[in-house]
Amino acid sequence: MNLFRLKRRDAILSGAALFLVVAALDWATSNALSLAAFYLFPILLVAWNCGRGWGLVFAVAAVGTQVMQATVPETSYIKPLRLYIAHANVLLEYVLVVVFTGMLRKLYNQERLNARIDALTEVRNRKGFQEALANDIARHERKGITFCLAYIDCDNFKQVNDNHGHAEGDRLLKAIADVAVETLRRSDTVGRIGGDEFAVILPETGRTEALFVVDKLQQKLRAVTHVRQWGVSFSIGVAVFDKTPGAATAAMEFADRLMYTAKESSKGFTVWNSFGDPARMPTIWKVQTISASDNAPNSEPSPGA
Image 1 (cartoon, rainbow, N blue to C red):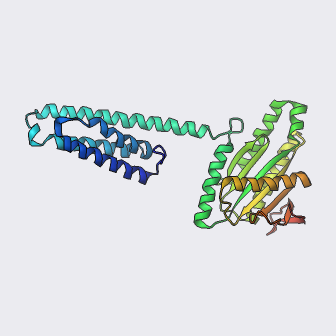
Image 2: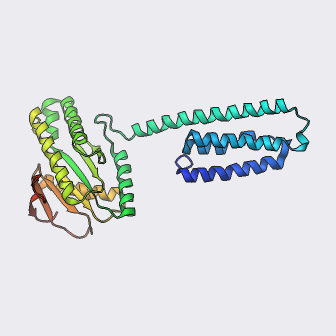
Image 3: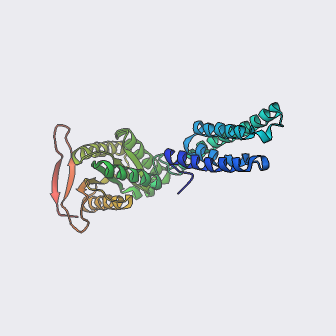
């Protein structure tokens, strides 16, 4: 169990259990031993995983427990004012710990996000994309909904680098990412998998809708590259998941094979297939143009991949 990435409910329950253990020891030792520092463990656990609000709740509860324990008869010789000042100092310390923990968690989340973003294109990198895909697969398994995964390869990308320089190649990659983000839906996830390869998660999307979305993206990519005279095309593999792939790596490998099928057969096409038994060689369809007035994509069959 990772104590730094607990769900809210698990963090509260774990923090409460730890709090009760410390409180019981505190009451058992009475004034013979101060356990004020040990209350920091449940406070930090809850503040990190659940936010400042719950951290402050546990901080107040910790001080309240210590106040109750300190008012038993054997401590009656302590002057009440000094006692309250001492507990107020402890509460201040707890509050400061909670506040600083919240600040650290915010910085941690930002750095964790940055580690999953591609610096050039500002879309998810491979690691960040795999995590998003794993979440969609889990949602698919819970709800039994269909989702699609598209793999995009920029054909002849090396020629852009060779003929115009790597700076121009970088501009091409940035343009691909920008067009994808602008064209696709807000619920879709775009990632740069590596080099000139991109991938898109289309959650809760069936085959027909996915092919319309991908065709729209294909057309806009062609338009941008034509204007800039980059001389590239795009081979796209669209994997339809009516059945769960089980793991993100399996889903990505399946979509990757479809993309290479498109690339090897004729560059600039979109190839799709439904995920199923890997031992079976299903029929592949090359999608060239999808008309908005059609209910189904215009396509031509080809031999299995």
